[in-house]
Amino acid sequence: MRLTIYGKGCSKCEKLQEYTESAAQALGIDYEVEKVTDMNLIIDAGVMHTPALAVDGELVLEGSIGSISHITELLQAAG
Image 1 (cartoon, rainbow, N blue to C red):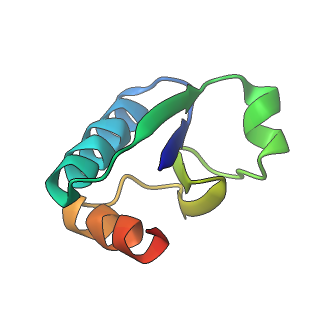
Image 2 (image 1 turned 45 degrees about the vertical axis):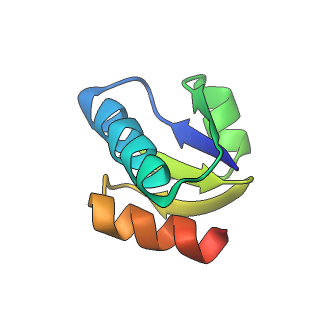
């Protein structure tokens, strides 16, 4: 599973990555994380608010960190 974190590298972006990796590990998912900090690439991906999370190229969370349990649900639904 490809997990993409979109954001400028702020503390919220780091927290989203931490929560996402925790959720993926708890589910036993084989994953890779990509961090996108280039604003042009973020805009090209259709992200209007950061931080954002995409799972296998599909935007599933935007403009908030969410909780680990919410991210776990998103990963299960995408898996």
